[in-house]
Image (cartoon, rainbow over the protein chains, first blue to last red):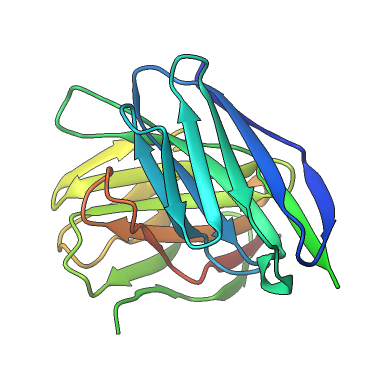
Length: 116
Length: 113
């Protein structure tokens, strides 16, 4: 069964500090891995997407890494700001051969709270 | 402005009363999908569509129907809603499944009593 597990479930960090979120997946065949940011009550917003051949990708203060061999990904937030308080969701796309395309498997998310 | 719109944003209904949640995008995206989000379960894909008249089941399609007659619209239909379909629903679109700019709608909070 395709699964995506994220850790920790939640964390609290002080403004200005760094943090790293983890994502482990058992998805086959793998197509790509995405990280989303979701503010409370709003739709998720894409941060990064990585395919099998990519090891790292950055979007401002967000840096995602991917180890396709161990099926692990991480999202690093540098110099956190109060606006980083949100849920961060790891999503893995299952590659399908048929024309109907890919399916997405979502992790449960990590809730980040940045305190002043 | 590029956006995905959903209507209604909030809906309270009773068991068995058919309803439709509309989704529309103005970005000429081919790929559209529906998700539900429940506490402790995260986002789960209900249905997706690669293009007009091409739809496929996601992880939790039971009790839902979709149609894709036009590129911009992807309505979600609940023929006979039940209380376990009480949830927060999101529609999303993108140029393709591998394009990272997947745009999500604002969400529809549905309560079935």
